Length: 102
Image (cartoon, rainbow, N blue to C red; front, side, top):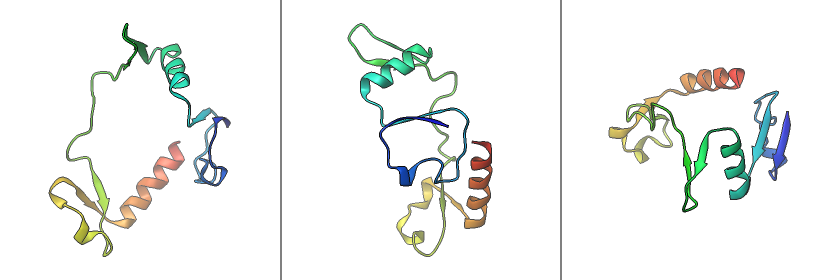
């Protein structure tokens, strides 16, 4: 994995168990973010300076796509009308799948 930018080594993707053969960019400046996004065809800069990103056909998140691990610590602190409960076992399985994919 090739890394670019400044970051806390103790919190790198490697230490979190996420492996990749690609480039990883940490804490880039605004100018660097503009350069990468434009050079990869993901965005363009308007005449007045703001960056306009191309998000594709689907943008945002589904309101029913927010999950919180339900346990004794957070149960009374979460407004459950807008969030779906998830058991810890389900979260751990989902996290393991994400790490394996990444």
